[in-house]
Image (cartoon, rainbow, N blue to C red; front, side, top):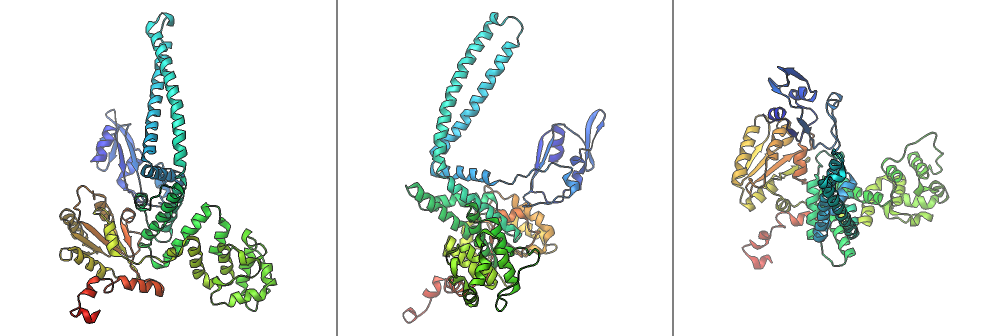
Length: 553
């Protein structure tokens, strides 16, 4: 009905969150299959024939990260990439941080933009009046009104020119003050594109720009203030980087957490021109063998595959002369090869003082089985020990960060069962008896929709389990979630979803929701840490509920 009305009266229409396949009923509209009927331009839409206005415009948007449209769809529309660029994001983040830290500057700059637009408008009006006078019939010297217009135009032009000079000086002063915050905006924009690329690893790793911006503002407010600008920027940068790491880590599987830390470190190094693309590509692939490789001089302990990688590493800027040193210092390198912890071993010769990343390249060539602990050591050196110790799962903290319009999503893995933690939290918050639980499957969609509608108004909790098995209903769920509004939702309402990784899970829900994984931590240290915050040790009542407290203590 909305589309038909807009076509008739020439209004623009925006269709949001489309998928890769479009509704066939829109085919005549996309192909502009118009025809004349009784002298009026018309178009068929479904079963109806409606009048077609030439002023009608149709826009469609998608939130898919890398959509692939078939050629027959692409030729019917004009595709525009609206993905934000790094420069554009940097400007937005700069505006946010300056507005929070120096609101006077941001307000003054906003006023300058409005004033500049107003001056341009007045200048345009003046030019139009002058053209009107000059194009009038008769002698211009006898046109008293025309002479008055020309005189006033000169005065207005001089006033605007003076204002423009003052505005330029003020803008220059503001830009110099804003420039001090440029570093934080630049580094933060790099972090956003780092987390955006995580969707290439797992389709459930989706993060929206709005979510990122909210975290950025929260970090500005929560980080340690300082009157010294340099200390303040360092504090904000450190706080936001780790805060973002914590928020993203709770939605990652254990196998990807170290990879994420490594991604943050290398992205920052590449942005600072400390790390080259060929070096990073070699670490990931080991290079490509071309032609006949040289004979392996260390066959007694070094495999031909490793020697081939050593040869290719010697072609890199960081690896020049490496293969010659292997031959010269064979005994020293063999000692490193036989070491239980080669990533901590002091390398022989000139390689003793090589960069941490070059150490990784050498480790990849000689002891690829130790590359994971090597990467952990590298990340700890570059970013700090805390970036290789992910925070333990904390469901209560996730709940505190949520709101009625943001679904909470458990991303499941083999052997993980979040039900016990969820039921315990529901009991603590007083929703244990009223919580509605639906295990999704064929025919369960209407029941789930009814529970959501009721709880949205009354303030209950709804748990939809196994969303991945009911892919056909996910579009309906996405539509329901899009209608959540802070003004109409009950403050206690929460929607909990569980799903295994699946390509059918709606991207918009993933981007706007709070994603959580609950896997056993890797390593003794993290497991012990997790045990201390889990039941019963993490529950204060466990220690105070003993009937014989004196003997207990």
